[in-house]
Length: 109
Length: 113
Image (cartoon, rainbow over all chains, first blue to last red; front, side):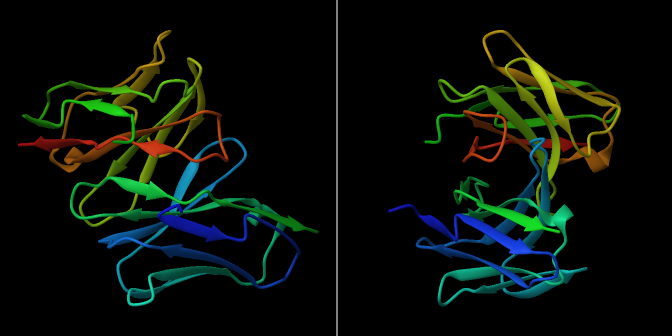
């Protein structure tokens, strides 16, 4: 079993829909990252969380440390949101990241 | 052990100097990504190489450059260093160019004094 599990693996939705991507982990962490990877390969860091909730534009990320679970939400989704969304957890202070397999999101116009 | 090797692990240098960070990807991985992480910030993607060629570029300063060699190891060159360049620099590798699981090295902690 992977230490970081994301669901769903693939998600196709219509423009405007509310999107939720989930991340569960089985190890103790010091931080959790949500990243976005576009088809060109570039990776953008969306959030780094250690507790609570963060919001940036149409993106919202939450984390529940006790339940070892995080969610990434996209409101009013748009085709330009189509990308792979990756959850990665950091353990301790050594900055070794454990990545989830990613969720491939396609938003259709 | 992720299989990604970065050297050196720690580096302390003075402002204005130039340093080279090295990354050896996992065996079989063709893609190398470089990231910068400051203490209070998330990952900042710098640049990606795939099979020797630049594939994507992120928030990389003009003072920084990178390359991937025929044996697929990569080097990140940082010049005219400033105090604000102090950070963790790490690379990741993956088999393909994107959308696949990537494995991170343990990083190089750069301190500019």
